[in-house]
Image: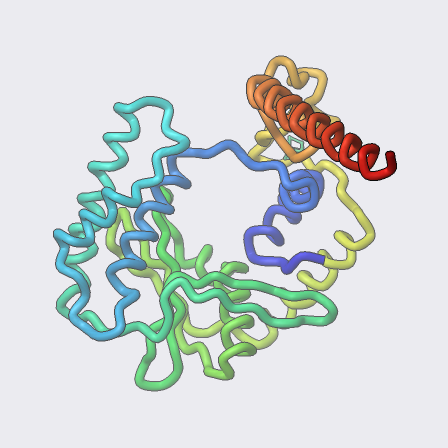
Length: 290
Ligand code: SF4
């Protein structure tokens, strides 16, 4: 079974069928502006912090990197894309001005951690880990508009999973966990999660892993329905047949009719080349046998 992560676990909790479509069948979700925007900001912050020795690059270089690595997909129009792009520049400038004075070299940037729990692998990609006087702090950047409440932070399955993975892999105690809200520049932190809470989440992950192994993939209605694949959902397929969404399932995953036609033409050409080569090989064999 492929490693589980916070994203795949929460997707299974949201809707097991959607998990299957995404992680078993490999269908790709539609690109979306907020996700592309978040990716672009994360890349720029990685550039700022992922250095061998201080000082970090100047703001001008960070903004140039942001421009070069801007993720373009998912925006409805050029105007919308420009609005997001300009807003991202403001966010990065404020972030830089607020954090540059106390800049410390992080212990890890965009670290990819993986542990075994039971028979499965659990993976966590963590934006930043800072060393504290005692222990470490896990920092996750949030670029969405909704502010995070203390209650939400205390209940965070994501950060508790990160704590579990990092402590097991690095053998260092996590003392603080922070969501850094990029739009407001407000970090919101909690002390480490209790061992009880982490243990409960561990059990929940193992139970989800069992269900995945048993192929329990029922559709579950939730606040985000319909998802990107309503034509494959028993609750929505009558309202959203494949022709209406313009999305089809081809042998390698989700594709539009235009992509399927292009692939067909390309493969026909390739097949023609193979047939010609086969004829040549047949001739060589026949000549050899004459
Ligand atoms: S539309 Fe169907 S498959 Fe998609 S999330 Fe909702 S219930 Fe699940």
